[in-house]
Length: 541
Ligand SMILES: Cc1cc2nc3c(=O)[nH]c(=O)nc-3n(C[C@H](O)[C@H](O)[C@H](O)COP(=O)(O)OP(=O)(O)OC[C@H]3O[C@@H](n4cnc5c(N)ncnc54)[C@H](O)[C@@H]3O)c2cc1C
Image (cartoon, rainbow, N blue to C red; front, top):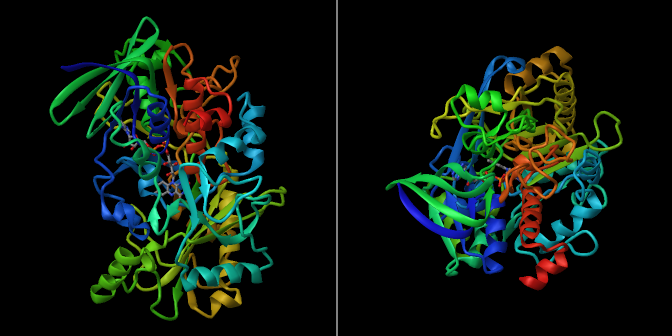
């Protein structure tokens, strides 16, 4: 075992959250070691917005596989996650969404002191550098670049108009006073390029003498002495290593890896750890529990003309698109693919319960090839899952996959919400602006009226993750036995150990998860540095 180097802080996982924490600690003068299991993010298909789909399934993603899911026809769900600097923010669809105010008020009501909407909003604004929007709800000077995409495909435009023809309002800002409505997403892009947390936060401190970044470093466990995290061990191409942290170890390995690291380090349900022969450092029942994810289910329409995004991107055409992007950072390759969407209240509960991700092309997933030919995919997704899953160790071997049971669709209301979403998508597909470019529905069926049982069967056989795993090391109040973290994101009962990633969410927010992870990581860093307000963070930057 090589090693012995000492740092002020070690950050495990250079993803969405990890790059933010690293930026702030390095800027404050701390000596920081950032360990990332995957390779660097230096790849054309990462920088070019439209090509992220080509990164999935390569060495820059993990594909986590669930156990068989009883409520989804016994299928195993496959959950891609980022495995490179920037993590999910380097491979995601770049949609910039924060969620609903009620989501964060529910966090506060569940015992997360300081996390109500009014309290988190200033931290969203601290992070944000919005190119178009300003005012009370938006930041314009933060590290995270947010902009409108430079390209809008005719099928995305047709969807936005078709939804309005169904009576849904146009919304120019899903992060504004009202989330409800249909429109175009803002994205974490900057001048036609992806703006991941690696390209923004990490790049801003790259080369500083107090920062060491090691890629290809798979962390095995946190080293704990006398109830305090003092370092980590990891393996890379040259063998096993150890490093020590005098002040803080921060876990940012994502919601499927952070609980695994805690368990391997002896932090988790004591009985489970003993069964695997792992010495218990801290009995914490909630580690790996409370898994949540968003699921969506596609409605596919066949185009009358061969126009779908990237559908003609071959040979000379592909070359010209590439050249346009290279020279001007404009054109089709600046599309984030998921250009349009919306938020709809399908239950009458008074707030949206369904989000649409609309792709101007026919998409498949890890399990299925896409439909052949040209078309559009309308993907309704439920916003507040009621199903809860679990992540456990399958063995004490740090390199063995964890046992992950998402228990997807186990709560009947999740199925019911998706069925309502699919019905709405089918209605929009038939509205005039889409009907004139779409000849017929490919799935779930061409007939305008389908029995609920047919739609339910389609959902059980086709529902897939929106890649938002969360909640597996949730924060909560002192008297909450299932809370793994304090509201300051400290691991309960272990000094010098925090979590800054999606596993800390107590509840999924009503929307995409990258911006909320960035906000949470900003707060984690500020808490470590003793900065109580965004103004203090700015003053120290
Ligand atoms: C394909 C895809 C599309 C998405 N689209 C959107 C979208 O459009 N908008 C949006 O807001 N969100 C989107 N998301 C979700 C969002 O990107 C994630 O929620 C977010 O990136 C999670 O951040 P995180 O810090 O929790 O984890 P991650 O960003 O996943 O970071 C974890 C990092 O830790 C590393 N790691 C894991 N284990 C170890 C280990 N043992 N040792 C060292 N390093 C380790 C990983 O390689 C990874 O780089 C998408 C995600 C995916 C995968």
